[in-house]
Image 1 (cartoon, rainbow, N blue to C red):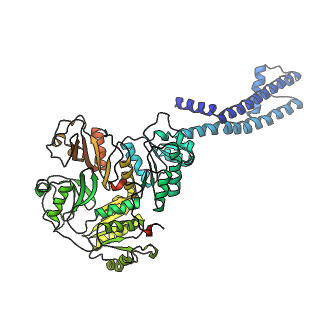
Image 2: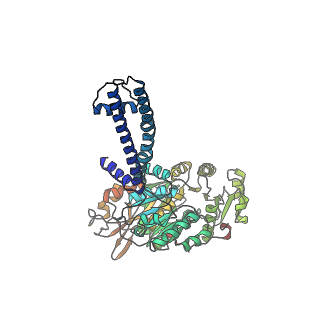
Image 3: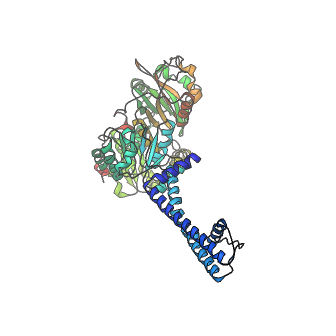
Length: 592
């Protein structure tokens, strides 16, 4: 505490304004000292005139008691001249000690000191040795979820905030903030942007363009990731120097399409890690229903492994004795060839040609429709705002909460309902309604805030995708030295170096799944990747393992075995969550 106070005082005094304030305070105290001395001399002379003899110390004592209005009354004048002098001393003391001194102290000392305290919580620069840090420009739904992940994986970061009051509020929440204007090159110079691992800006398209242009003037090689709401902004952001443009609506639409089961039992790829594919497949109406995972024979006869299952939106790591039910969605891991063999075995079960039902024709709804069309899947959109209709022949105009509208759109026949409205409360409402109408239908829903993921699952959603997780997954995947793929809301693929304590032991002996909840789905060795390794596979020292798990199980793994990550380059374009700015396929309806 004393060291902090000393540092703050040094900062207050050493600044240009601090030196000026110090000179003002010094002059004020010199004037006050001279005034007290003059009054003490006059007191001594007037007391001698009245026949009273006092020491010089008594004179200073009397002057201070009168000027401070304490007035003990133990020493008084007996003449009118002395009383007039006492009144002059009293009035000047009230002005100097009760008015000017507090005002001067507050103006030239207390306020600068408080400002220095505030700036210590919201500094304007980062230490000179700061490197490999992530710079953020906004505290929104994406970055509020990103910051805990950065802290979990020990990535240094700083949030740039232009307003002091907002910076102090965020600092009180435990967020590392730096005060500065986003369009000022000096701000980014003080943030050591040339040494940063990434700049991620998720403000408006116009503000993101300004940030990218400013940063690129100072750092030619630093990756800049920017979000974009409008398709037209993609080219502008690219020209401004942005390395990667995140179209979150497009990413969510694509993810919805890959998660649409379509009423069949075939596998649907939802994530890729080099040669390893992660897919989902419904077990309904297949011979797998009623069997345990151990008795399913999928690994032995097909070559895929079940790493977990979804039960009405709840993910459970695979266990040999886990029973497969009608509502079970299997999460499969395997190579492309193994998944093709799985599809050949189960493609005959439960196919349907009924259109997928999309509730909401906004950006996410239109993106989902385009992604389904690319997969040759039919769809119907329910949208109550006629101006948003992009596919007139496939759109039912009306309120999605109206039963007649839903029936006209095909709620009774569809195998999947995708809810894409902008309002989280409306999505919960529609999820409950659709689940009541069709207990057996697959329901996918979009959510803006992570806090509403659990309510949507409780309402009956089978899968939920949030802006926050989608953006966090993409940004974390783009960070150098990491490879993280979000395969579902709260379910990630991530890579780690084999810990020393596990080197030379088999996967079964390591008990990683039992200790952390994460499953080993691939092993990287100098000879290449081994997808879906056997439990008897030995983990070599220095090898990389690919694991799948929820956010909680990933945290348990990092806590148990440490967070050593292999150094990797920025992921390739094949991952849909990391597509560069040039990869887009929007229709004209989205450009307005």
